[in-house]
Length: 246
View 1 (spheres, helix red, strand yellow):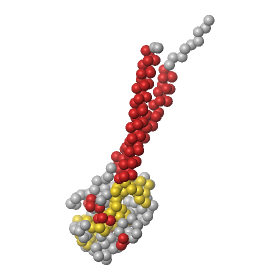
View 2 (cartoon, one colour):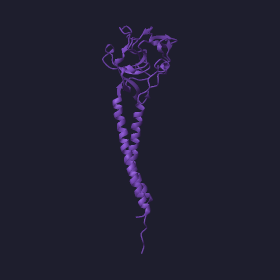
View 3 (cartoon, one colour):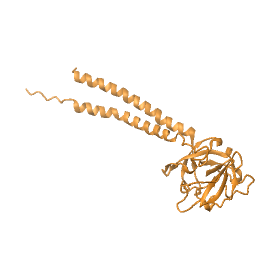
View 4 (tube, helix red, strand yellow):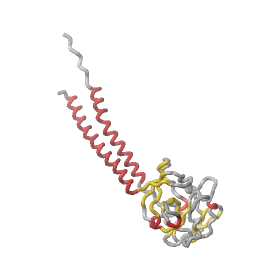
């Protein structure tokens, strides 16, 4: 056996072993990413256009399962409140317990006297559509508005309730991180609340789950393709033997 052939066989065995490792690791990452996502996130279809343009009617969102105690201003949450209806709803938190919410100053929503720059509102419209008088959010509760405020059945509509239109934190089921369909991606940060006490929430681990799934798929495909590519490469390097003429 020639040295070249022995070298090729050695490289072939090492390559096969590495490709097997790549496929195994890829499967772990690919399946692990989906399983991780299933535990952390829940899909939800938004039935109305009260959150446009951030989320449209019929959009499929991915919402991270969280405890209502960690909700911050600016979060878009999925919640269910009996006095609001018998199905989960999606709204944006603009005030937490103790906040004074009002509308409007220079056409902007105010929280504790601070004008909020709400870049997520529909173009050409502003917070003045709510017409909210100064309202104090009860302790342990949340004040929620839709981004499309001209037609959103939110806290501004429930101001006559005993709790000033607020919702208890325990009613929150999840926090929306991204619009999965159509592929709009991660929600923009609500920067208008960033300078307020407590700041804003950071996105969940969704992007890392996507990296795991995509990376796993690349490893599986790359490892599976090694065998055919390696065989073709060895064939191209093997010299052809000319027939011996008498």
